[in-house]
Image (cartoon, rainbow, N blue to C red; front, side):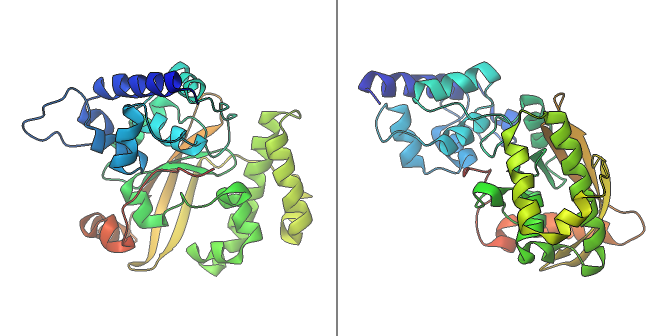
Length: 292
């Protein structure tokens, strides 16, 4: 990047940071705030970056940020679609195509996620790639931000990585497999025949999983709008929850949130999850997806 490009990128980041109130992104404003909007350390925390690295970006120094770091910064700063594209242009990076791991989380989805502080919630793509999780979702489901490539899709891992299935009791595996395949068929059809991302992933699944191929041949189609799930949690045991879905207008993204199934005792377990907190359960700070 040119020196002038670094300076303009830093100025843009600073201008976006200064317009956001802490409560807009789920932070509690403390006393004696000396700067408008967010502090630099707060943006770094939200983006999963070091404070020193973010400070250098705003100063117009440092290295060219990766596409994944730009995605994390765009989400932390609640950028609009136009601002998101502008950020990538300033950094001289290609704007990620919609539907991938570095997709721009739609502002309405991100705002709702922020307000669901007491409920496990996350935003995923129609290919089941987790884009961002709130702390309770990390505590319930584990940190999904370290998966890359095809493995960023939980539906892909479900059929290609046996360890992915440990989250659900074995008795539920067949139903989950059928639901994943029917949902992927519906999502791929809505994307259309020109979409290469969904088509290539489905081809890999057909070539690598006999189970997927057998279910795919049934031609079942159904979007997952509401599920009842039993989740194996390493500290709390088996939780029975309802998983609710809110679709974006184009269907490419979904906000998922998890509520206890009435009469199962899971309400108390989810309350315990909130009391214990993410750090105590995972041993690391939760973060949004920053890898592609």
